[in-house]
Length: 420
Image (cartoon, rainbow, N blue to C red; front, side, top):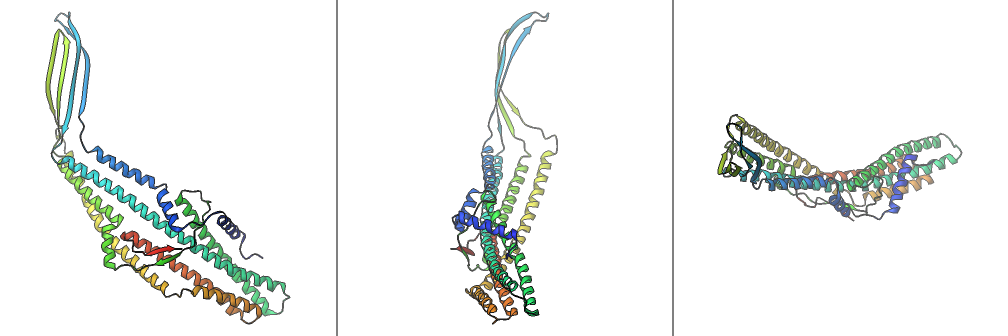
């Protein structure tokens, strides 16, 4: 009887086939590939290009050229046609803003560019962090699945050995049932580990912009954890570098400039229009002059614009205060989690899992010889799996906390390095 259910076997075969057909990819090379080629990066780059184009659009106010062409007829009082000719005119209109208004518009557009740059940098950093987390998840799921398969194969081999013998009493029968029960539990755990592996593989391929079934084999790597700086240094760096907090501050600055601009725009711009007109008919008439136009403040719209801008600035200010409190809470929690998990990992002996694995294999050999009771055998097999899963899960939690701490603070203090 097989040690794994058919579905799990198919998953393992697909992973093994991929491994046979693909060259191992280093983790950093995979992260660089995702960071450079993720399809959604084009969206943020286009948004940045649009913001820069907006700055160029407010850099100056272009003049407006107007040309009119027509036909003029002159008739006497009795209706007799006196003369006929061409009538045309040309004018050039230039709007003159009040001093300082153009600079305010440039400042507002400049903050739009800064917001777009922060958005692009934030997405790229989050993308790299997610790629590293998934890469380790792929490694951890594969390690778990291998350990569970190893123990499951032992139980399957024992069960086949017991079934091949003649029943020798109640004790062998009960031992067989205990082995079968453990095998069923392991089948479930193996399926869960293999599905976890497939989930990480599918998401990595999605980040790479490739087909879900694209083969990927990562080069073996292990996480190395560094020491986090003091909490005060982390909080100071977060206030300065955090992408989300920076975007909130830039939005507050933008709303401040927008308020000043709204107050400035209560005074209407003046448009000067020099013109030249010529009319033919009974003789020729030529007119040269200068026009002056400005909108009349017949409504309360300018004041309403100021009130709306002031309300948005107050909202942005409140958002900055809320974002700072949330940032300090998130940084503190991530730092505490990272430090606690790293300290827990460092209490482990480097060869702890290897010792449990050797003990499980030794127990299997001696149980077959009758030198180890069933209880000890089952306990050592479970201890090996639990120790392996505990270490991998703790490493995954430390890695997630370290990557999040670096993302929140913008500091690359070597929290986690995936080394060959």
